[in-house]
Image 1 (tube, rainbow, N blue to C red):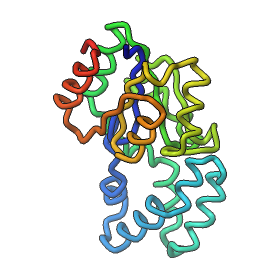
Image 2 (cartoon, helix red, strand yellow; image 1 turned 120 degrees about the vertical axis):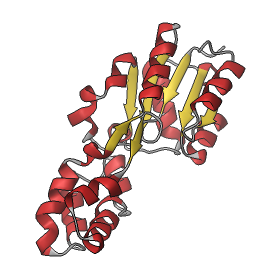
Image 3 (spheres, rainbow, N blue to C red; image 1 turned 60 degrees about the horizontal axis):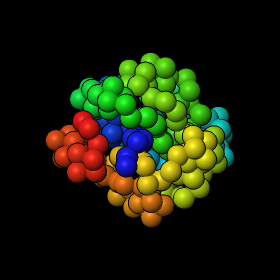
Length: 202
């Protein structure tokens, strides 16, 4: 029986649109594309999610690939990147309905320590019973250790968890550990149908 619903954050609770955010502050297309690529798509970004690279260390690395004239703008964008998160209101409603129906709600997210600067401003968080942030665990999805950290911290049984993520490899990793999984592609009716198929009242 499913008792716990586990949500990813980006592209599940939020749309993550760093290119649109960058263009709002950088009118030149070439500059915007360069900053977006080097700031938000750098391979080192994953290490901030893993908690092995600090904000300052990350910016020092990537700023070396960005022209000096753009450093001030790039720093602003990096420090305010959470403004690129656009809430999916319908998903907040789903989380609220699940909570009202008696399910425990958890967050399992690849996210750096910057998460703690803004998470209290996320409307959906009022429904959540707990969260695992990758930077705290020094591991990231789809590595099994981060799922096990969730089970261990909150005393959850994998078979009692329904996991919602937008990346197939993350869903597959959860399923290998015994969770019920759903790969969310912005189709809320399909999600609700999958929840009901799993016996979840929503």
